[in-house]
Length: 91
Image 1 (cartoon, rainbow, N blue to C red):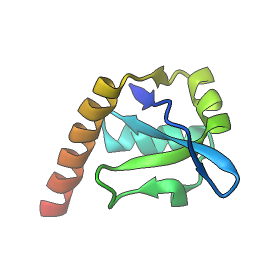
Image 2: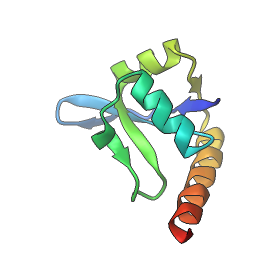
Image 3: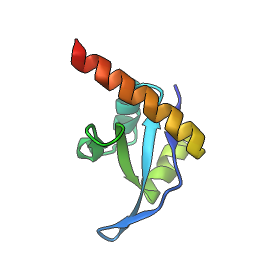
């Protein structure tokens, strides 16, 4: 299982946010549940499927084995997730 977190720091509603992705949607959702990320933070219809997580949640994700991802790794994972989501919508 590979879960990726980036180091974007977008300020919104008093928090700093970043993104969490994975190699596939099932792994992403399972990991989000493991670290208790609210399902409402999943963005299915964004430019790529991902969870928005706070910087504090990122630390929890890293503690549980998430990978500090480069921009290249994030883009690669994003393309996989988007393709998987598109395929699931066709079936």
